Length: 141
Length: 141
Image (cartoon, rainbow over all chains, first blue to last red; front, side):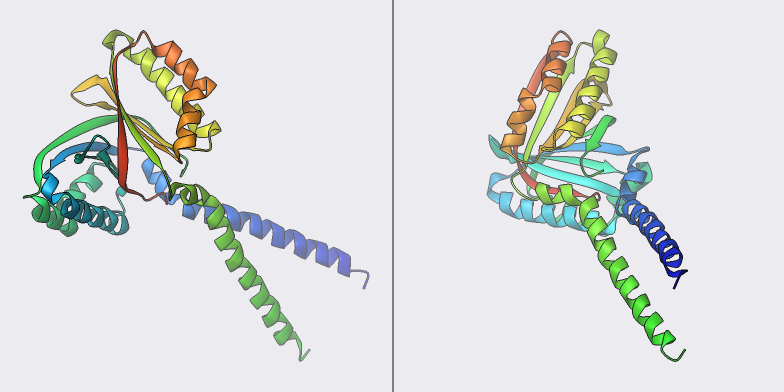
């Protein structure tokens, strides 16, 4: 009976140590995409003018393509699509890829090709801008 | 002696259950900003032309402003700044706020006012675009 408190205290210490290590580990896993995001990201901005009569179909196709890319392509880090408030047929897509290879792989992905093919009659113009990242800060890090 | 395996098995089960709940809890905490991001986000795009002679000073001031905003303002979710590859004096900032109040609070924040004041002689033109978010998907969710 005399030894119990010491034994319990050791077990308690082991359990707490394990929990702290476990927390660190889980947090690292949860945040692992940010590790890839630290280096060599490729950021591209696409600006599109959509045929206003086909805007709803275009938005549905874009949304599906974005959701699939984020889900199945590990190197596609962020895809943010917005329309301009004073002209909703103008779309801007802000794209962050882990690196150049991830960007090139995305262009060859079947869901991207499907989207390109499905929307080619909806897009009146497309302007792509290659960029140099200066600061990519997000609360989600 | 006969009871030990049962006792150990129960203790083991309790420990595993606790670890699973703990993992879920830590993951929820790690991802909590995404919960706020689900509703009412305000996305603004700023396009700036900077005096090329003052570009380095401008970039330093912008970087400091972005890092401070993300750190101290809970409603500033993401600030992504890039320069155009074929004209690095053209800057594009893609901004995501939790809601309209967070956006308005940002405009009044001391670090934002300091940045605006420090860079007013460096910025040749500034165009702000209000947008309607269509899809804001990121691996960091």
